[in-house]
Length: 123
Image (cartoon, rainbow, N blue to C red; front, side):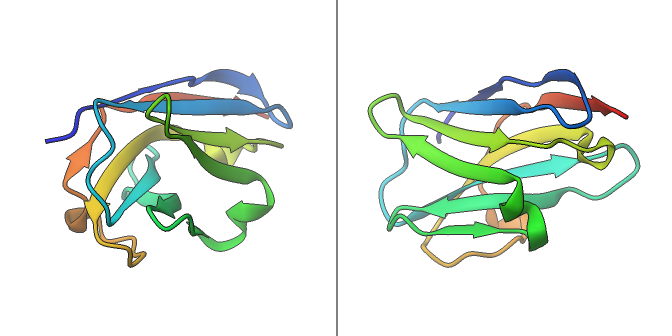
């Protein structure tokens, strides 16, 4: 089982930026997808961005215009750079892992999850 620890959340004003980090106890054996999800109060958990062991990335809708997912293998860390934040980005952000290269947003297919880091954007 992979242990995940998120950090980097906080309270910011609309238009500002944040970079989230997720430290892995170890990257899983390939092939895998590692992802950022978020969950706002009263809403379902939704995918934000994914990156697989082949180096491909996948974003939900138009989030690619403002968010960038990346990883540092040496630091065993996954990042999410978020720019031009909006009030609707307010949520708890989680990182997660699933096996395989195929992208999907199915929460049950992700086997390991972090505890989350809170992002609050004030307009």
